[in-house]
Structure formats: C-alpha cells, structure tokens
Amino acid sequence: MDDGEFRLILLRHGETEWSATRRHTGRTDMPLTAAGEAQAVAAGKLLAGLGLRNPLVLSSPRQRALRTAELAGLPAPMIDDDLAEWDYGEYEGLTTTEIRQMAPGWTIWTGTVPEGETAGQVRARADRVLSTATLEVATRDVVLVGHGHFSRALIARWAEFDVIEGRRFFMSTAAVTVLGHDHGARTVLAHNLVPQLDPMEGAAR
Image (cartoon, rainbow, N blue to C red; front, side, top):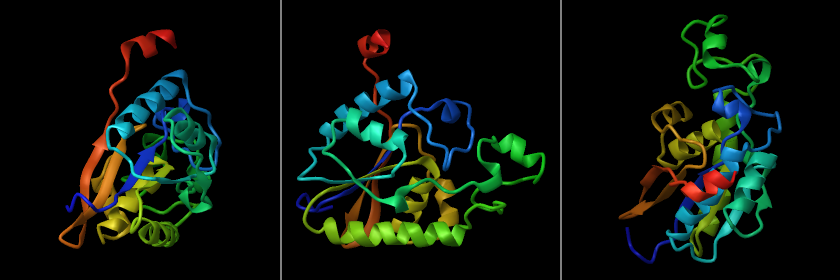
C-alpha cells in the first residue's frame, strides 16, 4: 500500500445484551452494555493510533452504532440506513442453536430468513455503501460504524467476493477492520483488530 492512500475502516458496535448471548440482533434497537461502552472507548484509542486523515464517518441508524461512534471520539457521523444490520425477520432475537432446531445446519450465509432479507438484498445494500465510500476514500479516510454480519458482507464485497464469503471474516464487538489497496487491487489491510480495555476503565464501570 502507498502511504499516501486513504483507507476504508469498519468499526463494529460494542457489546449489547443480545450480542453477549449470541442472539441475532437486526431491527431491535438495543443499547450498549457497560462492557460495550468500555469497548467503544477502547476502540477510540485504537482508531486514534491509525492516524485518521479528515475522516468521513457514516453510521447505522441504530443506537448501539451511534453510541459506539460517540464514545470512540469520532466526528459526528452521517446516518446511512444502508449500514443497518441484516434483517433477520422471524429469526430476530434467536441464537443459531435455536434456529437450527427449526432449520438444521442453518447459517445466515447459506440459509434463508423467513420474513427477513435475502443475501441478494444485503449485497445490494453493501454495494451501495461501497459505491459511496469509494468516491470519498479517494480524498480522505472513511469510517463505517455498523454491525457484525453486515460489516462482514461489506468486507466480502470490497474484496470482490460474493456475500456468502463474509463467513470467512469473523468480527468481534468493537473490532476494527482496515480496507485499502495493494498495487491498485482492493485488499484487507488489517482485520478484527480488538481494542485493549483499560483496566481502570473497566473497574470504573
């Protein structure tokens, strides 16, 4: 990567009660837990170490993403509805184990979602986000604050894979992924960077 090139940076929101118990959280507007708030603060320190250059920040409309952006010390984000999490339909609030009792072997990447989004619909949203981000990243860093599954779909699409390959890019709560170019080819520069919590911050909460 040329040191003069700008980057596309993904930040997943901090922990919520449902993410801590591995429940699929799409439309439900869950707040961060105390641990999630501490994660978001720590993520801000990690982002500061990246030396962001005049960043444009875009965020999902959900409070867990907006609060993460705020606690991370990012500039006020513009809300992009396309950054919302995958719509899990009838599977909202369920764990994969619970879903597999109804649909053996199910995953979000390979299965269907009754009353929810298809992989094709998610791909269309991801491509719209990346179309906007690609224009902006020509002149400055861009930070996308969002969710686990949709961020993984973004990574797959940036790398010119189909959405299903998002399964290859696990992302922890409050983790950071850095996307960019290598000799003109889209690449993943760093993935699933997990912020180190300040022990004093954790004790305070």
